[in-house]
Amino acid sequence: MMDITYTPYIDPDFEVLLERIHPPRVSVDNDIYPDCSLIMVDSANKHGVLLEMVQVLTDLDLLISKSYISSDGGWLMDVFHVTDQQGYKLTDQNLILQIQEAICTSRLSNKEARPRGVSAEHVALEITGLDRPGLMSEMSAVLAEMGCHISAAVAWTHKDRAACIIYVEDSSGKAGRMTDPARAAQVRSHLENVVEAHHHEHERRSVRLAAPSPGRTHTERRLHQLMAADRDYDQCCSCCNGNSEWDGINVYGGCRKEQKKGLIGTHVKIQRCKETGYSIVTVRSRDRPKLLFDTVCALTDLNYVVHHAAIGSQGSTAFQEYYVTDRNGTLETDSEKHRVTKCLVSATERRVSHGLRLKICTKNRTGLLSDVTRVLRENGLSITGAEIGIRSENAVGTFYLKDATGEDVSPETVERLRREIGGRTVFENVSPETSPEATPSRTSSGDEERTRFSLRGLIWSQLEWLSGNFKPI
Image (cartoon, rainbow, N blue to C red; front, side, top):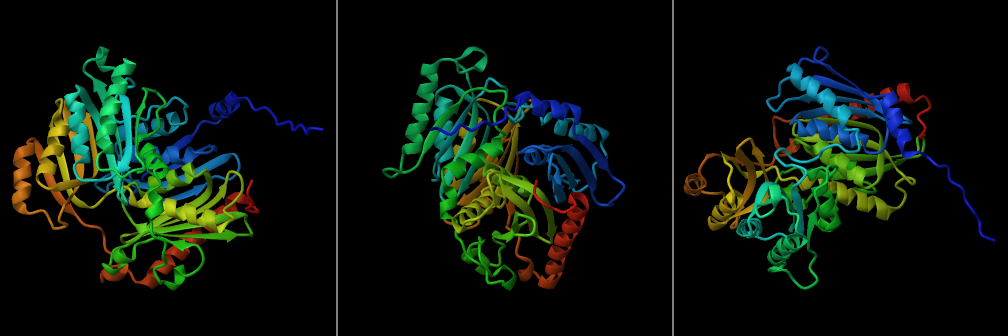
């Protein structure tokens, strides 16, 4: 006899109704701390809402220095310490109103997630494959030759793998739309030929056309998903740095080569808390903008629920502590812990934030990206990360570059690039921050220990007050 199991039916509109009855309450306080603004959010809880809030703050170019998160049961309470890019508090009332409106509208299922300057009619080209010098230049040249205008593009490289999302409009289509299926297949075929060049047999690669959609996944989150699907995390090393605090089971991350140079690697530790039923995921890494977004994005896409968290930094080192559960259980097996840690290490290291940084602002035109990347390739530079978009009639872009020989780019090359690219160009040498231990002006390891202890103590005191017996619901 067949067993029949009945599951309760939940109207999909019920969750939306709850959010309408209890909309998010967002308040911005500039009086509590002298050096940052406090953004406090009370909201109905659902999977992914934390990522949506962090995504909103990140897209507004705000810097999150600390955060305390509690989301047990059906309610969520988040506190973010934020400043603008110059390190100032948020005093612009229009910006404060924009933050409040953006967090509330981020809960809508049809929210917009495209880069500025990109309409819903733009086709998104999603490309993954083996990284090699000149790849971006060749792809943009092919698109220019086929009459495809690039409206925005973002590219990341990690562990010899590359992922890129290019938003294009077709000059041969009506209102720039790529409506002809044969035309779309032709563009895809030409890009596949470029990506397949220099690939070994059975090498992973992918070229995909994402149709226009008003609910398209956030671009940078989609890049994380593309690189994870390409399994770039398989090449991440798993080692302990020898610090007694991090000696133990399930401690991974950091490259020994980087540690010898005095650089801060990424280290992940996972522990099981039997008293609460949570798994405690602790991440230590070099501090940088958008770090919280990248970590929360990885946990969300791995289908883990963040119930409580404390995020802070000491000097150039960031500390993140998450109390999580799997939506179907907890982190039980060593193999699953190993997979999660490698994914977290990759998520924190994919976004390039060092090297020779080139910022450009010039009048937008067809073939601009092709021309810029060609100049960079001809001068022996490889692109390790890039972002380009449209602001009014101008094209604004940021490129992270490295020399093919591994040497610093000479001043003569920089001047030649400035002349050939034109427009407003700024070159900056951005080096990775050194570890606190390697820099005398940084705090001692004992001070760091007290900082971590204070973070843990603060979150426990807050969570005990908020959660009563502190059991997962």
